[in-house]
Image 1 (tube, rainbow, N blue to C red):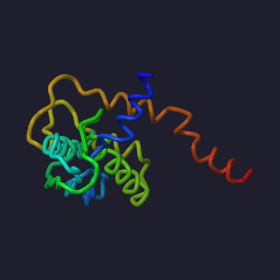
Image 2 (image 1 turned 30 degrees about the horizontal axis):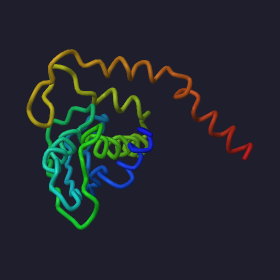
Image 3 (image 1 turned 135 degrees about the vertical axis):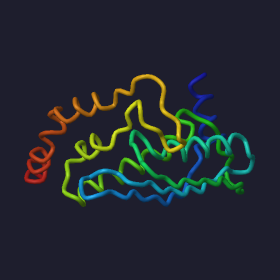
Length: 169
């Protein structure tokens, strides 16, 4: 019964904030990110709820795991006649990080660089400042994760598996 009630809640009540996003990343000839621009316009639905804070989290999370020496970020969340948008796991970051990561993949393809290598060249380290000018506390370990991912057969053998799949289908 509890599971059904939760399903009804997400089916008939709050939803994630949808955002229209315009973003760009400038990158130099060495594959180093130079700037991030991001303009997000969200739909908060019929009640303000947590829209202002979800929008703020979403736009600040757009930088993902990367260091950008320059940034220009903006967000607006407008009311609408739609279902009220709420605060859920990820709290806006899910909506913004996905498109940044897809853009990083596109950039890697366009400049002919392995996507994990592009990420390694631009990863935010503990001593660097984020797009809000603050240095993250603690030790950031994303570089270690990228190192492991670069060696993972799922990544290293992806082209071979793709060709094999396409040949069979």
